[in-house]
Length: 245
Ligand SMILES: Nc1ncnc2c1ncn2[C@@H]1O[C@H](COP(=O)(O)OP(=O)(O)OP(=O)(O)O)[C@@H](O)[C@H]1O
Ligand SMILES: [Mg+2]
Image 1 (cartoon, rainbow, N blue to C red):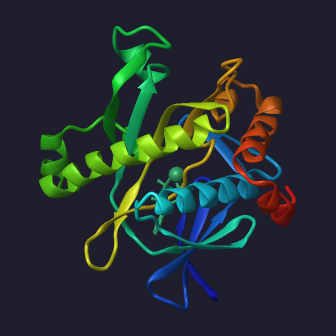
Image 2: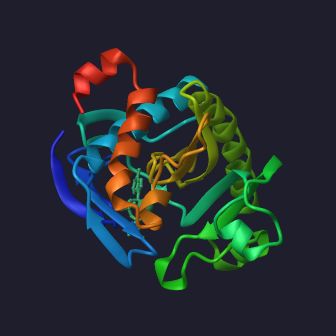
């Protein structure tokens, strides 16, 4: 599969067209950003760790009947994926209250959320990703009611599957953000990435953070050890000897 022109140079990934018009190459770079891209650092191996972890998770979700963009990992940090018409919504699922939720609403940090909260933010750094509701989504022409219903249903399914996936690795899935897109036929497919960049993960025993929150809090020297620990726990020994990270 040959790489053609860059179609989206995002903050941490670069998306390229390929010789097959239905497929894209997603290169996970070593960049790490916070605050809508205001702070940026380069973290060695980060691209590989996120691409490998995302691939593992996409394959796991496929095994649970959830359609994802994943086709194959071409290199440790390069994913071949289905090309999608991305819906500019960050679908956020929260199992435990923390972060912006406790800053904006009268709810205590660490409160268990049962049922989980499904929240949708408009993916646009210029507007600082404001929260959406159904009327706003329709007014902006971002998605139809049927599509919104599918997003909510899929978010719940992804959450159920991922909670189990991480639990088996001794990790609590606190919350996460996912993005969806439409394929040629208009089917809603899970795209982008699922990694310690896009999830809040806490160690089940110590409740220590194992995700990008460490970077947001300025603990830059601890971030990659945490990502590596997630990699070590969720990948099999066979996988690890293949990737050698
Ligand atoms: N399968 C896919 N097909 C096409 N585009 C995709 C696919 N998966 C993800 N994308 C898009 O590629 C980009 C990924 O890059 P990255 O995550 O670095 O960007 P970002 O920081 O989220 O910000 P922005 O996209 O606003 O620049 C996102 O815009 C994402 O929506
Ligand atoms: Mg992104």
